[in-house]
Amino acid sequence: QVQLVESGGGLVQAGGSLRLSCDASGRTGDLAIVGWIRRAPGKEQEFVAAVTWSGGETSYADSVKGRFTISRDSAKDTVYLQMNSLKPEDTDEYYCGARSSWASVYNAWGQGTQVTVSS
Image (cartoon, rainbow, N blue to C red; front, side, top):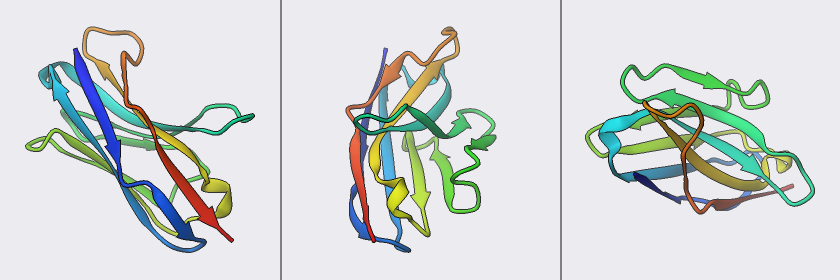
């Protein structure tokens, strides 16, 4: 199994930046994709970004394209989400998830980290 721990959330003013980290441990050699979703009470879960573990291919939600960048450091088993030009509507709980190569869905999740953007 893979364990994920997020960090880097916090309070920032609109237009500011934050970098989230997702540290993976356990059977990281099985990882295929690592991604971020966000969710707030009363709102639907929203895909944010994902990166393939081996090739580094990335994908983004339209709402964050051009502002957020996902990257991975395979040596450190860490995935980063650099968030720039933050908006109040980016306020959410952000979760890191991972899908192992043998799984058909995301099979590991972190505990979440809160991002709050003030106007």
